[in-house]
Image (tube, rainbow, N blue to C red):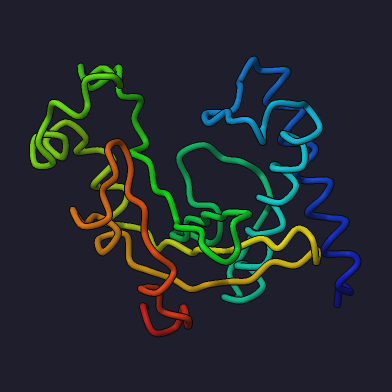
Length: 183
């Protein structure tokens, strides 16, 4: 059985591998803000993301290879892991898996569309989300801890109440703590 320190080291290695592989492939972060402006902060985000996925794998007993496999689930066959470093007030953010440009909607025009018309533009995203469970994990970087807030069926994430312009922002209070309650 692996010790806690071994898990931490494995997740660190996975996160750094993801960071360097993405840069070699010319992939840059989707969301860049002032907190992600340096290579070191971007590496740290990849490491924390891997730590959160590993925590969910251990919590659910599902497999996790650590390999970023594009369109397949983060953990097991159907679990998508989302995390935030805003451990007290953070929301789970689920973005449509397509690039807005592919839909014909320009990012600066999204506010001109109704929620229903946006949903009509992203059928692949909706199909993907319906097949998955979303795990939400918060990161307390000051205390070097992750906390699994809970789980939610993807179909429940797709809720107009959570829609914030170009993504769903789901509050921590609506997650089910036990993964087993959803399957």
